[in-house]
Length: 260
Image 1 (cartoon, helix red, strand yellow):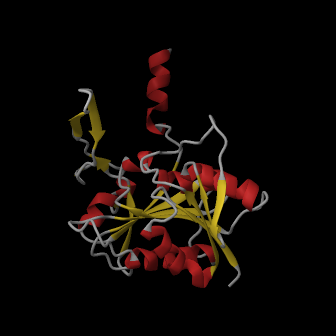
Image 2: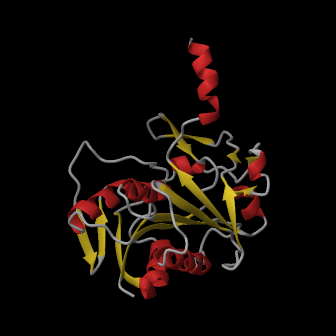
Image 3: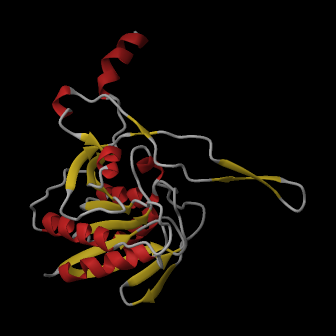
């Protein structure tokens, strides 16, 4: 197969997840890594406008950029690909879940979304962490990515304009057990940690929240679907089609009446 596959992430060019992703997708064609030179977790869809960016070729078909995942996709298309596009962009494999509203914070999801803005089919894939935080096995997520990407490239899994698939693989997931889901409601709590510097300054470190969620109401036509949190809790791979359109369509007429 002669497909060109561009992969990025927000964990950095040396992360184990991106290396596993390259290995998993290589049978489908030429895989090119363009990723941040250092970790950019929770950078959302930020782009770097206040300074120039440097591209460094680490090895053949692997580049690092001292910017964000969105920077990586933008520069890849217009500099490395000379205004042409790869056949698909795959962002991940992220170290940790991207469920519910966490997708808004995620640099990994943003990398895929930037690709969709540039007219390139894209998915984001994340490995949900259980009790084990070290020596994470990304192989199942790699197999899931291979299966989904292959279907997209063969036009058996079409994506709409400016739409991506957000995939979350549970710790004990099975690549054959997948479910189409909607984004759940993430429950956020105070996870701010106070430290004191040697000079007596108060410093705050923001920590990660545990995976807690709330149920949400969906339309009658979607009652047969579950949230991404529910699927992952049952050790099922969650696949959620998402778009960047944040318009609250059901509120348009209500707000229109309010302003008259």
